[in-house]
Amino acid sequence: MSDLIASFQVDHTKIAPGIYVSRTDRVGGLSVTTYDIRMKYPNVEPAVHSNAMHTIEHVVATFLRNDPCWKDRIVYWGPMGCLTGCYLIMQGAPDPETEICPLMLAAFRHLRDFEGEVPGASAVNCGNWRLHDLAMAKWEAARFVERLESAPSFEYPLAVRAVTAGGEAFFDS
Image 1: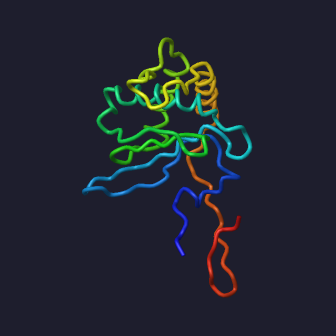
Image 2 (image 1 turned 30 degrees about the vertical axis):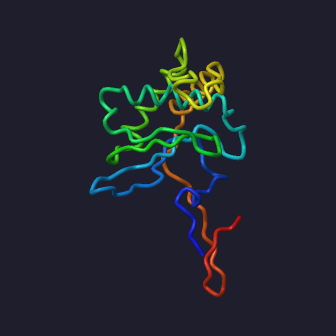
Image 3 (image 1 turned 90 degrees about the vertical axis):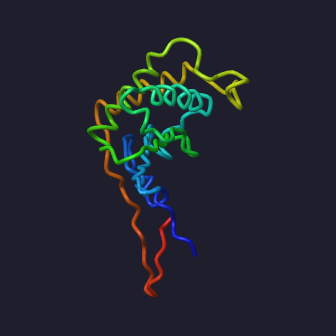
């Protein structure tokens, strides 16, 4: 039987909006870190609507890949399948609290204040260019900025692994 991957070993009943190290991998001798940029309380709040999340992806990815200090270390930015946040994958292992949080605050303030056309939102540049909602993305960005400014979380609450009397380990559902 396969073991649960790291992101499924987090207790989603206790996770709060914040920035978490999901995993760190070695790729070709380099360290690559995946950050969980959690915008919502999972299974408590409504998830980010897909149209807004698509806009968040476009605007924040454009911001990150153009940031003069960070652009060369950004590997990937995109939404989680559960639509409660995004994954940021970066070269190296920048500190979530002192380095990634200020970067996310800058990116989400940029989105909150964004005016104009969503970058890459055309049939030529995007596979589902009509699936955007800038107004709702800006609302979600403002809410996330408030959360990061007031009470961000940086430590994952891990799920408890139950072990049977026979020594079989499993995750309680």
